[in-house]
Image (cartoon, rainbow, N blue to C red):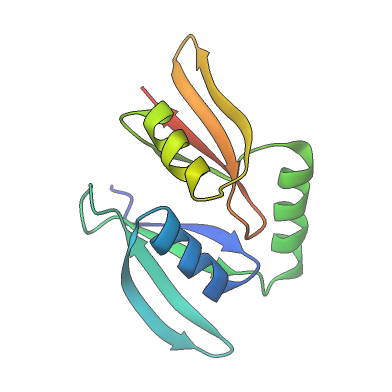
Length: 127
């Protein structure tokens, strides 16, 4: 078994597309109309092109409740890996990304947490 697509709920697909591509640097793979929403997937320019991040619209009320509860509790929705958290922190901070946790050292590595502007906290992790 392999992970091919993982999703993240976003409150605005277009805003999420801009943030995840223009700010974080992901690359658009699919953008297909799907009723009132779109099937938007992204890939990392640094990783395999067959592992996709789906920008999932919040059309399902329990999903919105879940997303809001995670954010309110300060729990990241997902974790993105980077080779250098401090370097990414500096780059993203210069672009105006709001970090709720600056680079922090833990027993298992270095991490930081930022707000993706689409309803989620995202953890950056360095192993």
